[in-house]
Length: 81
Image 1 (spheres, one colour):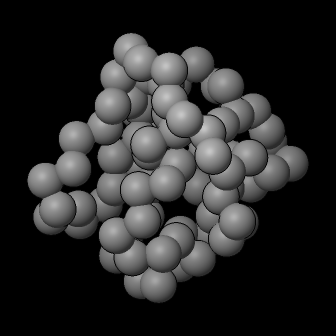
Image 2 (tube, rainbow, N blue to C red; image 1 turned 180 degrees about the vertical axis):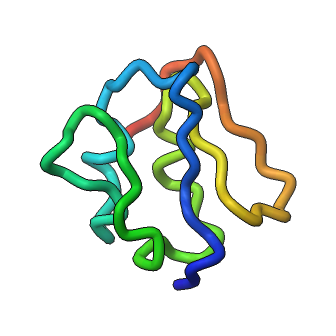
């Protein structure tokens, strides 16, 4: 885990579906604000994990200091397993 890697929410794309909040097992998001995603524990995010970003149906999640070349998926139905 690192303080330099964490999700960044584009609120213009976010539809507040709550998929990211419900997915994250590390409590990076404030669950009391569900479905509005608010990153309140960025240091809990696992370095290079794209789990919540892969589940976002609108591609609203990117990551601070992401150097992987990963591009957020958009306009698709994603496997939530």
